[in-house]
Length: 114
Image (cartoon, rainbow, N blue to C red; front, side):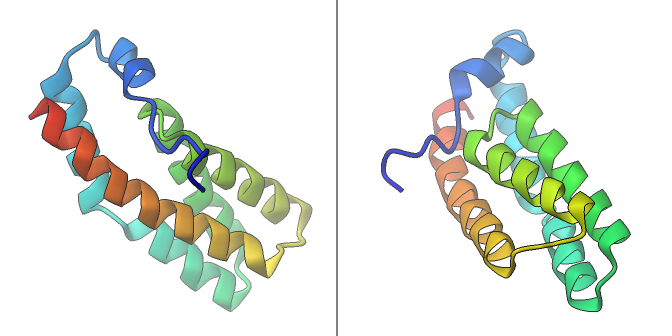
């Protein structure tokens, strides 16, 4: 995954008028609330596609706004599969893996801007 872009801080900073402290604060807030990924995992285990769709939609939106590039891409794919009613079991694993990698990468970005 070395060629995968997890975070694009330059793009995100444009959204917050180059306010680095605000961007760091938003990343910290995202990091501290993992409820959507857990909610999606539980919903998928129960077969509750509507709840899973809502959770992944939230992740997708947050990822887009914070320029979490690969997480946005993976959540978009996950949302498409859920809407189609046919979820590839490996897709959630990939999404969860990218989520974890993104959280790790966030620490580096936050350290630059705090």
